[in-house]
Image (cartoon, rainbow, N blue to C red):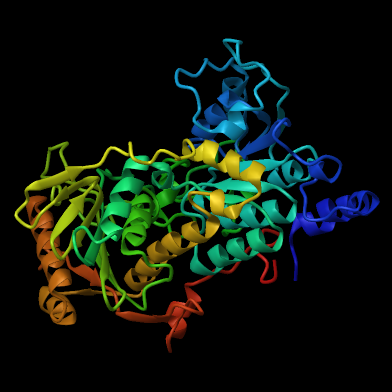
Length: 511
């Protein structure tokens, strides 16, 4: 069963054009003209109540790019984004280091980039049917990311998709398959992949300067307050098309006070902070380990502590991904250092970041230390002489070159890192509230996991949470076949690798 709008409308219409010109594998506009170094790239943005504003700003300022379409299911957000987009872009203070972008400028001496006509859409399917679009970028809620990517690829568009690239493991893999089948350039919005200091630091670690990498720790210590409680689902704002907003998820009025943003803390639409802010640190941790598969074993422990609200996802959590020769340990803390404080905990100097522990020292952020805590080297990225600009510019560079290898964060990288967040949550969701003894018994053979749990308890105790009374959830240790990306002999866990999609918003099994 194929619910894709692109196969029914876009490809049906463009196939005849392709035949006429003897072309295949090109975007709708490119059937008549291949985008080259002297051609502006036409792009549309889908979803911009938060991070998407940065997409609008990037494209409207970037030389060689025309922002020509905007889409949001909330009319109020759409109009606000449109008004913002139509304001003249301020001249960039720093010229792009991306030569492919700089070459196409027709207004290099002008203080402002010209404003182009921008079409507004409520329904992204109609935007994808726009034959003049070469590419799309999206910052919708998580539950839409993979379907937009698949549909975009099928419609002949290149795609910049925000993190996480998926709401579940299965659909993330479908995004990769769609990108490859339709020869599309698909960038993941993990901006640290375009950070030259991080690149320089990880390269140095991979060269063995600190010995073997033993543990990569991702940290998301970010204050998250209560979202409150409601007796019943509040009325949906009149400006929102609920059918389009819900898309692949069940169509129901959200049971929360704040419609926007707080979708992060509900399983139907979000992934908790491990898949929100945490995906950045998860991606860097996997990158540092040099692992290009999911972990064969995963276990997660956590809970929603410190307040009673409508949120479903944990605000305090850690997950252990065991690769056999190394560990990836991820920690989420949404409570402050202590009640009434605005400060957060840190681990070896990091609050939101990564600590890479090796045989002969560790990397905290982009600073290397020996095992005694003495600083060895501070990386600034200056050695990365051939780095191709920021993350948005890197996407445009690859769109022009048509080389997936030019991307800093190809969709495959995004899929693997997003999937590690999802498998963490699957263990948690299948868990049971357990006492301290049960938890310690489950992780007693893993020294690093035990140390992490001790700090987990101490953090909660500082916030006046006694887990002997308010028990944490202990997830089962799940084993996975990294090749098939399915759990071994666990139907319950495998059921959470995908979801029941709501027609017609279905990620197709065959892209």
